[in-house]
Image: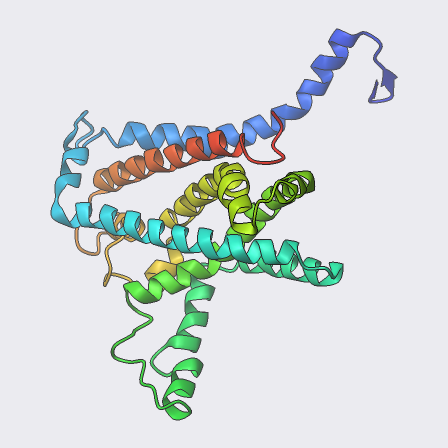
Length: 291
């Protein structure tokens, strides 16, 4: 290979030069990911006086923080489940669309909407489903249905809808390659042996897609668990979540305890790490994955 105008003939030197291209990426990960994580874990065991302590983690046993973890886990699980179920059906429908331009349009739309989150998404839902939102007024004036006060976008139910909005397209993008990995010969062989559509999906399709569905679910769970701006904009302190509690504790709006915030962040980091580990194992068994 050539490098800076010189031709390298020795294979050992060539491999060393090729490996140098990974150095910038490694430095980026080291500076912006590895070192901050190590500092976070270290500081979670440090008290306000600079001594080593476990009091930051013991403080997580308070009901308010236990409830925050429960709310975050429950919200993440519900929206991940909804995104997995509906995203799978929609992704299959997109893949089976005969017109190529329509398939590309839906895929591009899913790619755009999955990145539309945070505060802009929250404000969009307020405009649509707020107390004076467009859909709210249409329901009231045209259908004579009053959404409020039974339903409020500034509530747990509203947060589920908002989270599902950006969870759904993410699952679509994740599941389409797995559907494409299903061989047509498997379906044809099952039909030739007398299997119905239900039998095919029950005993062949779904078992093969199970790793992809598990991987998608845990990735959606992690995606929802780490969300902050959407939850803060819609519910703020009305609904206690881990991400919003970390911000409140750091800013000192009720109590100023950075050590406690670091402990919550470290526990959340462990939860996210477990999700990523499950995802990596599951996706390795997905259709089309390199073995």
